[in-house]
Length: 409
Image (cartoon, rainbow, N blue to C red):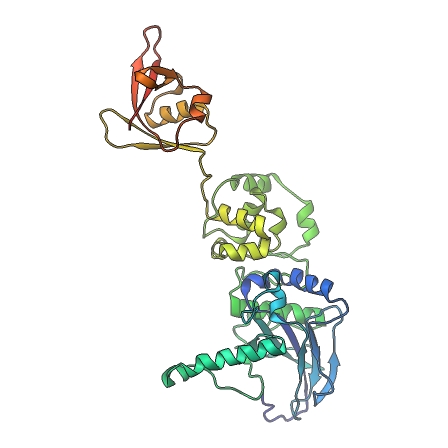
């Protein structure tokens, strides 16, 4: 950013932070950073290299936030800041693997006026970075060079040239909807605004009403379009809340569900521990996540379970049989989950649109054409995908019918 011409000398305050570029990791940023801190106690993710930097008036390293810092500088003088990143991209991949495909970080900087009654946002910028160990970085550069050499001159023109310094992509202040007119009173507020603005612009925030970004230490929530204490939300309940939760139990989630409906659906389907992670996701947002994304966020067991629930996958039946009437050449599939004769009786009654109490007994055809009473044990020993012809016989002693399943080879 060039200083331009200034009639009065003013100072700027810039806040720099390393966060995740991928959207699925942004919503678990706090958990990822806490996990990193546990394995690297006393270390920071980001530092400003003060001896190498120049033209800075004041540098503030926030000890509570391992991935950010701020500094004050004079735009009328030449200034330069050197940033040291102390973690590598593969530390946040599954099982610390990844090779050249490590997690991309986003280096983001917000600049505010400094020394005024109200500090105003004047510039936003960010860039994507990956951090590797020396050998990994050399291998990455070599691979990229080889790929570039194989491209045509026309294809090469589509890529940005190399620079000696980091070039940030400038973001229009009008687009930063949540922080364009905000006031920076403390580093905590600044960090919260910084993270939210860039996550909206680069990842597409699922909830435009949200004022904070998950993982930035703020306990507020905007599930209903406002803000309030998380503790209060957890401790209060109403009949409407219970009815809403019950209405989502066992039902598939639709793409037009709101963030509040997603939260209710998660609670109704036993995913309570992930409500905060997905609190700003709409139905379309969470349905776009792949099976691998959900496994990374929720772990193997819950990730598979959540994926199956979101995809509304039917429970795999224990037995499938096919039936038809003698006068019909079209078969109907009956999916049995409990393998009881009563379950089969009810499915046959539903298929042929009769009352279940009109069917007295079930039989299947045995060796030499004998009738075998179809009880639970017989049903449990039927072959998968057997075919039967259904014949109904009126009972002489009652108004009920005896149903015979004739085997078809």
